[in-house]
Length: 375
Image: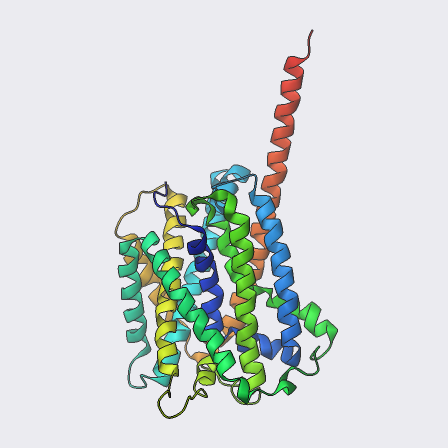
């Protein structure tokens, strides 16, 4: 039982934080590398597709108000299907936290702390995440609501402050390497909207379950806008240099911003905001993982969950040997996991659950009619 519910804007910020943090990392660069100058058209295209997917998800969830994907899996196939679904999402949460944390820690080491060991930086984040989870999920979400306007401001500010340095040649030809590459192959970039996966888990947390559709469309719509601005900054600013950088290309774009002699090196302020946002994002992921673990084993919350999870995440995060392996995991493994689990398996589960619900309701109606029929 979830005692404290969250409001609409808190839920929107929760889903939006997924896209915002991945935009700060390497997501825009990865999409540009796959679609080149056709990236702007591709982003508009996959944003529309994502909104269509969200529409179907909200329609499929209407029959199951205040239930998450684990409850729906239990309704569909019993405890065994619920546990399989839980294991898949636990793996997804742990993998995402581990790779994002390792990638961000590597970037901090290269830019600011060349003499510090990556494991030390990771441990500092994990200790903070463990403490925030001790405080509680509701406090994390409320803190994220305060941080989210700041990170959105930084993303938009980096774009508009660099307008004088933009060249529109980066978006021509509009279709990049052709329509096939932009619309068919580029459809795989739908993985960028991994925040859709959290729509499967927020219904039990909402104060007003009827607002789920509004929350879903607003959060995914804003996610598309964030991605568009992040991609636009890199594509227009310097497609031949910044895009090829391995670490934080958006951070490097922020280094170009200067307002006279007084306002310089604003990138340090932006990085501070991004660190706070990333901590909130990873804390939310751990909270969802804890919730999934509890529901799978029907356990009450105990204090040993979070320390155990953080140690496990720390171990996974140390597995990649170098930055090239981390980038490969971000570009390929993460992409396939999101497409298969969030846009494949989860949607199939919702569809089959609705079919079962329809058949049960039809059967109940037939029995009712049969009982009311006079002999």
